[in-house]
Structures are given as C-alpha cells and as structure tokens.
Length: 244
Image (cartoon, rainbow, N blue to C red; front, side, top):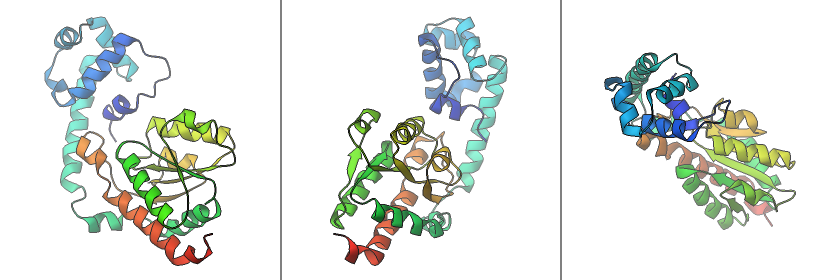
C-alpha cells in the first residue's frame, strides 16, 4: 500500500490546509520521483516557503519530519516499480479481473431507473461515462450527464450511476454524498471494495490495480470500457424489447 502518493492525490485531511502547505503538497506531488534526493532547504527555496512549512506539511501527511517522509516516498517508488512489472499488459488480463457476476444487478437497476437516470465520472472515467451515455441513448434510455455537484440541485426522483476506475476520487465521493442527501439511489461501475463501491447501493466491479503514481496508468480505461460494453450488451439482450 502506498504511504504518500495517495495522500498527495486525494488530500483528505482532517483540517483545512494553508496556502503555503498546498504549495508544498503540489511540489511534492509534481516532483515525487526526485524527493528522496532533495533536502528541506532545496524544497523551501523551490516553493518560496520556509523549512518550518515543510515540516508542518510532513506532519500533515503523518510523518515526524522530512527524513521520515523521504523514506516513505522511496518505498512508494519501489512499490510502484514492482507493480509496473507485474501489472496488466493485455486486455485478457483486464477481463480476468472483472466480476461479471455483479453485472446483472446493475443492468436491472439501470432498466428500472431508466426514466430518471444520471451519470457521473471524472477525468478518463468521465470520458467513459459520456461514451456510456451515448450507448444508452441508442437503446432508447435517456440519461443526464452531470459534471459538478451543483447540477444535482434541480433533479428530483433521479438515480445516479457513478463511473470511477479507482473508486477513491474525493469529488466522486462528494457527489455521492450529495446525491444520497437528496434521497437518490446510487449505483457504480468501479473498483472492488473501494470507497465508491461501499457508498453505493450496488456495483458492477473490477479488481484491476490502478497505479496512482503513474499518470498513464491512472488514465487507462480498458477495463472500464469493457464493463460499459458488457452492460450495454446485457441491456440489449435482456431488456431492449421492454424499453419504451
């Protein structure tokens, strides 16, 4: 499990961070691979902050100081390299890590809620959500794509389908929280045992390892596209004649 990179990307801290701490966090994330070779003084100079700010940021991340942070960063980098060598290399590998048994319930929910259905996704998963919306419309199922939390305010009696490859994106969780506060039913296409899955009523899920340290890995959507296609095909085979 990564000790640092997930925190830098998700930033789910108990307290509000200062602007100077945000600058340091941004620097640590953008220069992650070089952190083990840097000094507190160097980072302070590069971020136009103080050594005290660097140390406060380290404590914010759960470390006693910069030395301990560097050790954890190096461990994250080594773990990332090991996972890169053992990661997915073919579409067949992705297929093996999708739980197709969980598809039927999701397809049934989409059909049941087909007249009041919204889709949400971020980044590459957002592109996949838009692709899914087009496919659903071809089946005669109208959907609303939302891109921000405020768009939920004017929809009532709707259900929300969230697409999230990692299942740990904070904005996805915030949208789910808002939707549930409005008594909406939430479904998901996401990662097994992720926060998004746990927050959803039911999910069609995968167990593909997402390398959060590598931007390319984070953006890869082969498994998500496969899951969307299977969902569409299931709906077409089992519900197409019923859609009105």
